[in-house]
Amino acid sequence: MSETEALFETQGVSRVYRSGRGAQIEALHDVSLTIPRGAFVVLRGPSGSGKTTLLALLAALDHPTKGTVRFDGQDLQRASEAERSRIRRRLGIVFQQARMLRGLPLWENVTYPLIPQGVGGPERAEIATKLLEGVGIVGRQRARPEELSGGELQRVGIARALAAQPEAVLADEPTSDLDPESAEAVIALLKGIHAAGRTVVAASHDPLLQELATHTFRLRAGRLQI
Amino acid sequence: MRKLVAIARTGVAAVLLHPLRSAATVACLVAVLLPWLAGAGVAQGLLDQVEMSIEGGADLYVAGTRFGRPAPVPLDALQTIRGIAGVRDVFPRIVGEIALGKEQLSAVVVGVPAERLPSATEIVEGRLFRPGARLELVMGTELARRLGVGVESRLPPFYRNPAGEHVSTVVGLFQADLPIWEANLVFCSLDSAAEIFDQNGLATSLLVRCEPGYLHAVQTTLSRLPSLGERDARGALKPVVTSREDVRALLPRNLRHLTAIFNLHFVLVFAVGIPLLMVTSGVGLSERRREAALLKATGWMTDEVLLRGMVESFVLCLLGATLSVLLAYAWLGPLNGKGITGVFLPGAEISPGFRAPFRLTPVPALLTFVISFAVVATGTLYSTWRAATAAPALALR
Image 1 (cartoon, rainbow over the protein chains, first blue to last red):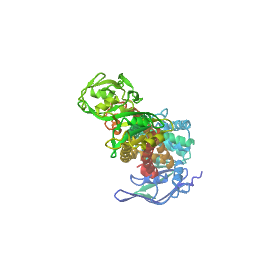
Image 2: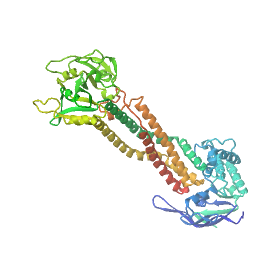
Image 3: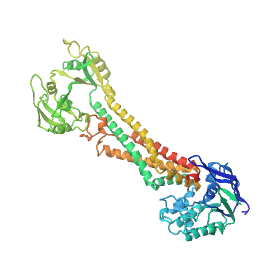
C-alpha cells in the first residue's frame, strides 16, 4: 500500500441543491482534493460549510452537479448504480446520528451490510460479537438500538461501518452529539481503525480528532480553503 | 441462492419490524376482501342449492299457454302424456302464492301427491298430509316460527271460494334449511291446493319423468301435442315443455345477475380501495425511504432492496388473504352470513332464520391472494423503488 496512492479524488466538484421554491443553494463550489490511501483526513469548517455534502459525494451517496469524484481511480459519475453499490461495500460510513434499524437487535444491525454478500446468520452473529466487543459493547448483542445511549449507538455505528472490512471509513461528525467520555471512546476507535491501515475521512470540529489528522481540509461556504 | 434467501428473510422480518404499518395494511386488505369473499361464498352456496333443486326435480315440466300467457293444465292431459312412449311417470302439481297471518307473510302453496314431495324435505315434527286429505298443511319450521304456529295449530281462513271459508290445520313441520328455496313453502295435497285456489281439475304444471334415452323424443312429442287435454270451448291449450337443462339455464339467471352486480360493486370498491391500500402500504413512507437509503448506503443494491420489499409485500398479502378467508368462514359459518345473504336472496332478513348456504371455492380464495399481492406489492414496491433509486444522501436527510 502506498501512502501517496490516491484513494479519493475530487476535481472541480460543485453541488447545487434546489429548494422547493426554485432557489438554488450551492453547498460545494469547485472543490478539488486528493485523499491518499491510508490517510487520516479531517474535514473542518463551520456548520453549513459543505463538509457533509463532500463526505456524501466521496461515499457515492450523492452525485455532484459539476466536476468529478473518483474512488480508487474509478469515476463515480460514470459508474452504474450497481457499481456505486459495490463501491459503497468497500466503504464504511458512520453517520452523525447513528441511524439504526429500530427493533432489530444490535448484532443484526451491525451485520446488515453483510446480508447481500451471502454471509449466513451464525457467521454474522459471530462477526457482530467480535465487532461489538471491539467497540466496547459487550454482552449486549441482542439489545435493541432504542435501549442504548447516544455514545453507545455511535460506537455500534462504527462497528457496522467495519462489518464489511472496508478500505476506508467515512465519519460525519462522529463525536458532535456525544459527551466527552463517549467522544473519546469514539476517537480512540477511529484511531484504531487508522492504525489498522485503513483510510479515515472524518468531518468534525473536534480538536481531539484534529490531533490525529494526517491531512486537514478546511471548508468555508462550500469552498476549499488552502 | 443463499444470498437471496437471506435477503428474503429480512423481508419477512420487516413485517414484524413495523407492526403498525403491517397491521394497517392487513386491516385494509381484510376490509376490502372479506365482504367480497363472503359474497362469493354465498353466491356459490346458492348456486349449489339451485343445482340440488333442479337435480331433485323432474325431467320435463309441462305447462300450458293461452295467448302466450301461462294457463292451468287440465288433469285429463295426464292420460295423454302417460300414453307417450318413453314416459315413465307423470304427476300434477299446483304452485300458487298466498298471504298468511296478520302480517300477510308471503308463502307458496305447493299441492302435490304426498309421495312426490322433494326428497330433501324432512318432516321434523308431526306428520305428512294424508293422501286426499283436505286442508292439511305441512310448512317449513321457519315459516311456522314467523307465523307463531305449530303442529295442530289451526289457521283462520285465508282464502275464499264458492264453498265458503275453511279453517286449515298444520299437521307437520319440515326442516326448511335445505334447500332454502323451500323456506316459505306450504305443502298440501293436490286437492287441498285446488280448493285453496278454487281450480278443481286443474294443475299449474305436469311433471314428467322419462325412461333413459327417451328424453328428447318425449320432449318433441309433448311439444307437438295440438292441445293439452281435450280442446274445449276456449280452444286449444298449447303445451310449453321445459327440460331440466332449460331450468338449469334459467333458474340461476337472477342469482348470476345479482352476483354480477355484487362483483361490479366490488370492482368499484377496489378502485377506491387500491389507492387507499397504496397509501396504507406507504404508511411511514418517510420511514421506508430512510430505511431504503440506509440499506443503499451500507452497500445494498437497488434490486436487493426491492426484493426485500417484495417479500414483505408477499407476507403481508398472505396474511391479509389468509385472514380474509378465515374470517369469511367465520362470517358464513358461525355467523350464518349475517348481512350478506340478503344481498343475494331478496327477502332474507339481516340475520337469516335459516341455515344460509355457502361454499368457498379455491378460485375466489386464490383471487383474493392475487389481488392482495398486486395491490400491496404496487404500494410497497413503488415507494421502495422511489426511495431506492434516489441518492441515499438525499433520502437520508
